[in-house]
Length: 484
Image (cartoon, rainbow, N blue to C red; front, side, top):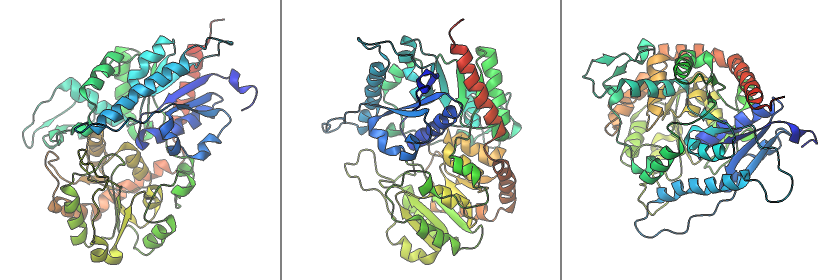
């Protein structure tokens, strides 16, 4: 770091745990550092291996602060493993306190001008408030999901009859609620914070935060109408600015339109049953637009009962497919075994028609390959924008949270996909999946619309987000500058 760099204003970025949160926060740090501000990514030390070594050398103004992490001791019988996950929050809170507290000896360092908090870490706002550090709330999901969440909460829609719709005020007609939109599977305990954490988070302000601004992982070119809705709501309630500063995808993503994108050059390689060269060779052997890519998130996926249904549907289909299966997929939260589901025998039954990847899959490579013609996805926001930017239509299978709104955005607003089932309150069946695959892979209209939307991303990182990041950093510097 250059001698002059410590004098530059510093912005802390505090991600939530999980790749879907960590990846956009790392990219946000790069954009902040590129604007001559110090950007510090604050992570728990156990996440260090998830941060590529290239990030540490990306820019002299970008640094990583690791907070101490102590593994939770082996639990007693009956202990819920999710308790350890959420207890990790309080370890991080203690680490933040130690990092921010003035040292008893030596000169008082110049503190950060603000902290950008992942919305799931919004409960740490009280810690930063204690040290008079302004906070900015960062939504790692899209504007549509945030707008829908606000609108649905305000409307208090409880039930709709089949064929009945409810138009949400201020949002496009295409986003009117239907009976199927209200049918969601019950949230499992593993997907939800325990009650004690929810109470602490509520007391700390995650539901009523005190941010001076809000950032979203999207752009006006893609979600302008929803960003406008959120901005109007913010003006009425608090007059705090709302900016779309994404999609926060790797720099190589924006420079590789029309060519293959190699994950190994961007993200830390993880354990996998295949390498990228094998994936390319297999995809090269398939006709253009013929392959269905099947992948769920690193933390969510179908139930243990649904995985065999998916395997049966892929076996029965005539379509070529790539199926990426995470280690531990389909494992019950109460299971003591780390072993998850794997479709043993499907590789032989499908033959050259199928490629099954156990572990990490080079998703950016697969989505950018011309043979890929469809994406069966849980609709996590990172996966959603990665596929939209490469013109790949969807078969949507949301599991929880914002994924339902992302799926509706893809299906009803962009019209570049189909739902795997109209009733997501029950288990998805082999017939649901098989019929959905055929609807998707034969829908030329969805493919053409996806190709048109792709052109927006081919121009490079969105101009609206470049302007928004400039406005945001200028706002922070002016808002926190000492009076003359």
